Image (cartoon, rainbow, N blue to C red; front, side):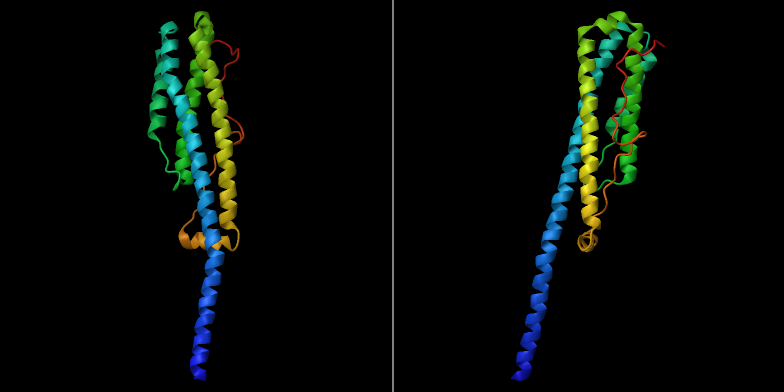
Length: 205
């Protein structure tokens, strides 16, 4: 009888330890899930901001084409860059540094192409004075600011998530359940700077 009591006592201890572990592990797991969802939401905002820019490009190209028909190479460059960028997609839940680099490079090509297109307008006073063109410029400037904010917000929540998953003992839960690191945007001149689209009085080319 005494032996049986000891057995029950030992079983109770094991159950107690398991319950305690669960009470500790479950909040950590849920915290990681919540943090990961925040990263995915922030990534969706990034994609939405870049998509907004992509949606502006066709109207911008058509407007410029009406005044600068001889700038075919520049116009085609914007269209091609936009098309290439829309082909690069990322799963926010499983992104890798390599994925983000490809995405950022494709969007960088769009930025460069847009900069060349805007510079072309300097040689066409009638285009610069066109109300539709000016409105599109304003929308594009606002979009670049939104992109910059979305990128910064993404980097911030990704940093919070990465810090959480690397902190002991949460790191153990992260390792067991496969919560991997999230990559960051790394802009050429610092991730805190928006892609440069020059709407100023640049010199004619």
